[in-house]
Image (cartoon, rainbow, N blue to C red; front, side, top):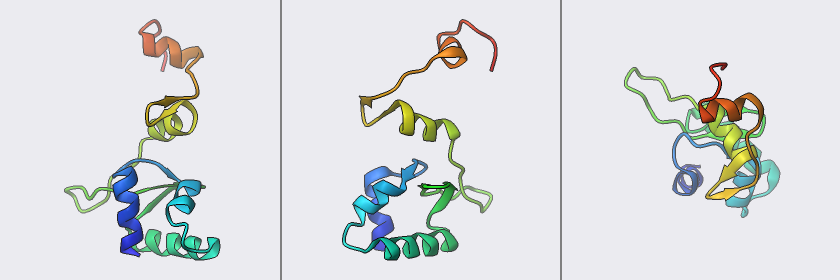
Length: 106
């Protein structure tokens, strides 16, 4: 299982959202049920963390003995805005105004 996790670390790094479809593509030598079994074991052992349905990440250990958390903004950006330099979405509304510094609302 650690070989498979190392593949994900090399491809996506730590604290970066990894979607189920990306894991299926990276571990294409295994059947779908076997991959989900490996994911369940990796989450149970702490090698992977499950952020939400279909979203995983590889946590970094922190000084107090726990594991790092994934930013909701990182998940949103990768899913809906941009990834690896490819832009396929945009900000609008308050997110756009806050990004331009035109609004104080959060």
